[in-house]
Amino acid sequence: MNLGFIGCGTIASAVVRGLAGRGHRITLSERSRTHSAALAAEFKEVSVASNQGVLDASDVVFLGLMAEAAEEILGGLEFREGQQVVSFMAGAGLGRISDLAAPARAAAVMIPFPGIAQGGSPVMALGDIELLERIFAPQNTVFALKDDAELEAYLCAQAVLSPVTRMVGDAAQWLGDRVSDGAQGEDFLRMLIATSLQASGCSDLIEALNTPGGFNQRLRLHMETAGMSDELAAGLDRLKQG
Image 1 (cartoon, rainbow, N blue to C red):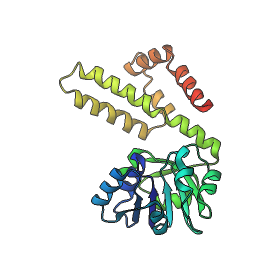
Image 2 (cartoon, rainbow, N blue to C red):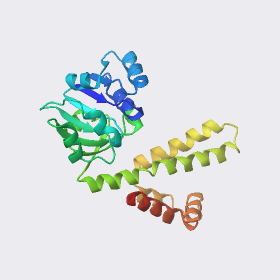
Image 3 (cartoon, rainbow, N blue to C red):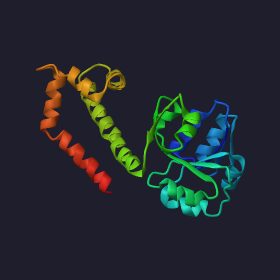
Image 4 (spheres, helix red, strand yellow):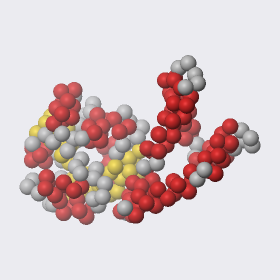
């Protein structure tokens, strides 16, 4: 496909890396010039153009912009009929994308994560799931959402990634203070958690780790007594309320 990116920050760059080498022609905008120039130097199928140049070269256009800046950046550009527009902008639904990109088709809103650069990443998406799966699957898994409310809920819930990472990092530091190779300890914990959750649902895994008096049960009960579950729910509710 002829794919274009307006805005080439960290997340858009990860998407480009995940798509490079798969037969696409990819055109990046000059915004975030450091990222776009580096990608063009690394991958022969990637080139850099003006924002309008991106639109002229592309059949599918990805918007990697901040929602509050989108109107100013896109206002003077000419989209065309038959183009499909996919937005990475949290907080901008398909209706707003349709207004910004007319007469092009607002195909989807998707929220990628940095892991998309290597593949094996989840992709939250609302809209034309078939189009996104043609582009991103099977290397990644597209999770189809039914409406803006579901997208908002998923956006809130995915924020658990940061506190979970902090918890693993803190445990790794605790372990590193007590073993000879702290880096190995962190690698062990990351692999343990990633593979365990990949292989089992949360309820099943908790039950499997619920041996009475076992280390896992004792630490979980300690954390729950300290308010872990209640504080997490309160934090998610606060995010949803804005």
